Image 1 (tube, one colour):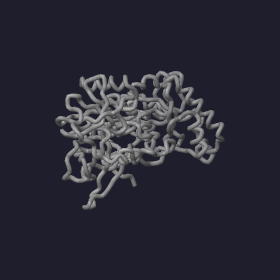
Image 2: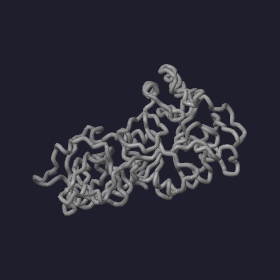
Image 3: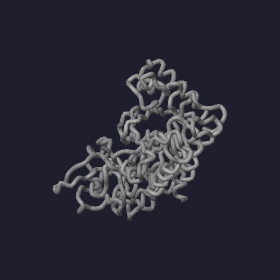
Image 4: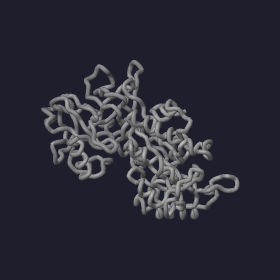
Length: 415
């Protein structure tokens, strides 16, 4: 626990964990050799955790920190290794990596570890072991190749060293699931919305959150998801984003206590024109919206983002009105929504299109209004390099079994 606190403070003081501290500090990296097997740490999501080990005799490019640790490049962030495990490279030893490969850009693809995963110095299980990557990591790859037995190998970079992982020991990253919810009711009080796909029972939602907890999932916010899309941060393999559209009162009444009990985080995409000045008396037969005080109450769990101001409506043909509005109308609405929600969050940077409706005009307006990303209702997972204004999401319905949820959320390719 002390190590995690010290590293968290170090990261806070030294700047964004999404950037390489080797370049931030302006120090030239120097190659050092491990004198014994050494544990390595890095920030993954919110926490600094053990991310693997490096075997004795391996060479890393490191920078000296004002602590007992050296820092080195680890994925999209910074790793840490105890200074007591390293010494200057002796004699004429050097890293045998091809500098062209070292400078090769990442492939916009990660691998995922589901157990402690062996890392090799060459694409051959008979080669000297470099070390291991820990369970539950996403790690960027440079590329892939086939060996003489037609076995696929992933090429990675750690501490300015090239290393290799067999595809038998890791999976390709198939994306992060962004779950979509709207309304939550108890079965006995749901007399009006039982057959609407956007209404989930309290029992089903609680069971789904219990499943995520029991499977060891970390809940991410939209800022972390942006770092993932833009290849800027390290995240765990078992990660999920939970979103609620509209800002309904049932979110405060039912979803908030469940998420808080599990220590989960979520995003509330709010229709800013429908925020109530005062809380309404609970009436499950109608759609009620949260008040100012109710929105402020849930902010220990929910990050408030935009679901537009007046554009959450449909026309006479039941199509989202956003699709028929011109650029200036849409831009004005998006900017107004950001201003209205600033009382809850000074960083309203993410948008959920009403009813999932969007077009090129809406995308341009979202960008120019200052949003960084926008989510749709198109089914699928979010992957690095995706268009940030066309992010996919997943629905887990009230009637879906936990087996269905497992298939949708886990790292399986989506059809």
